[in-house]
Image (cartoon, rainbow, N blue to C red):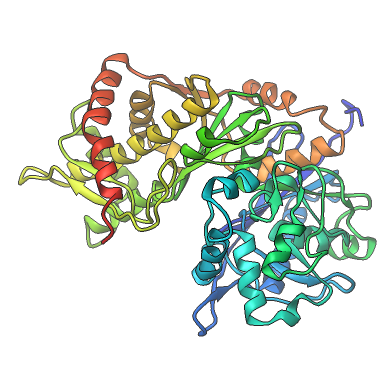
Length: 504
């Protein structure tokens, strides 16, 4: 559909995140009209594992849709795009949609033994080439196997839906998945772009367990008439699955061409790059990165993350005072330390190490402390350590992509600390581009749906829209980069390798 200059087009994004669930209403230029949020509640079952309540999830989403529409007086919404955390999902009845299993969070470790069974089924490289992933308990397949071991009757006439897929079904009545989320299950064959059911039979799982896979942003249908009346929506609102939250967010910052790189700087920090499809071999395996299909049609992504980036900064600010240091106090501490590498080093493995050397048993450490090490040095070390870890991922990605990464588009809470951004730019010798986007996942999900409906011609148009709104650029300092590079290569990287060998 061609855009009409006299017609205001509204789009809605839904973000089902680990910390919060959000609904946002935007115009087609990406301007925020209203946002509603609810905390994501984890329920401890008392049986050794935790769950989400799918009915609470749906009720929260429905209430937030009503809220943003009421706040703005808008009823006509062209499209709703839904993004979610990558691995969480549940079983529903194919005919009735009734929930038939617990909804397990991605971080629930109960499926660790099942992941080990999968690991024993083939060589590590072969498993990686099949899935694009480095196997973990968090993926969908181990969780399905755990559910099957608990009660196989859950699988009678059942379909596995991601959290995005579940909300999309409640809105439209259509069961589906998109490629970005399909490739996070460990059940989708990235080589042939299909569910690998012959292989899954080896684990005792039934056929027909997974829904159809449609391109990210593809219209699944419209919000049912009865539900539209309840929510306050006009008729004809299209529903689409945007996909994996980090990959959706790359749309919102304009990282839409091969070689474009996006950094989500939140509690965890994730680096995502766009690339042309390729056969995954030993070189890709050795990077420790994960691979999958991108929201932008015809492309794949590579992804690597540090699970404790902003989380490490949150941790240290709570340790250094009875009442947690404010961010203004932390900024002041950062301003008092000299430019360039500090004496103390921090290795941000509070949740284990991620790419390029994933090891859940690796632990964080401070090295190089002395009596002179005060609050400023500790805060500086945490910021510097997370910058070095980002550099480790960047270098690994450069090796496999064959492209030099000299620009990184960044969003998230971490972008509010200018000194930290400058440090990351200096360490990586890369310009950080910060667009005026506070809710990248929400906006990216909405854009995916708007592209899918044809209101926007292609993802390429988004980069122009974002540039028009103005972006901040943080350029690296060449002299400081040389100092940081030496420190990284001579001290940080060797010490990180030694820590990975220790299991405490």
